[in-house]
Image (cartoon, rainbow, N blue to C red; front, side, top):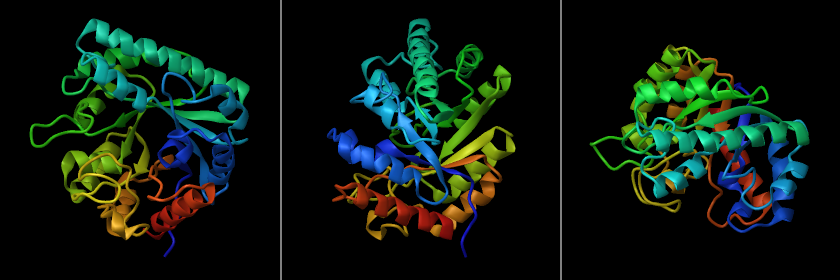
Length: 309
């Protein structure tokens, strides 16, 4: 049975070989080909201090016409967290919180630039509840109130839940808990949604069934607007060590990956999420993928597995 899905956003930076070794010809072929896949509405792209890690002007002129764009500053947030443990919009430290807000001002500037100077539309901007291991829900609410007043060129702001800090096992991101994020968004009384990533939730819970429960909690809050499908594994494998945010494929798309994201949990996640506005697919290219055609086959295999769920 084929499942009808909400419009999909493909994470281009997780899958693009051009982000590790800059190859404008390869990326120029890949981006429109990703957007041409059935059901794909657009791309998730990273903000790393600017719109593109290698050439923002190139990117502005090569964004596929008509594409929806989701902007995520998470790679930049993680870099900044590594340099300053106080950094983040949920920081109890004044200077750490102001530094994170200043960076988000830069994101807003680039979102407006992308909306004005490209043929795409920015529909989603992700926010992340750093610092690692020491965030504060009330400080997050204060930041959200401020951020929501800025000009985002019509984009929907979402708090993207990442694995929370826990004493049970090592964490990858170590941001606020889902309950704290929901509380902050509701108390901020701002038009901000919530976005979940299946892989990051399973890294947090270490239990695939518990991810379904977490999605249901998010949906019941009335804030859930998006869900990304990305895998993780309980064992080391070709995509990296166990319980890391390696953007593993769906299990059916590459059985060698050991991904916990199997058909049953895809179906359960979709059912728990209900009628979310957008879905995401955030998977790495297969080891050995070097061309745009290789990557498109990988994404197509994952899309088929997602629809079969």
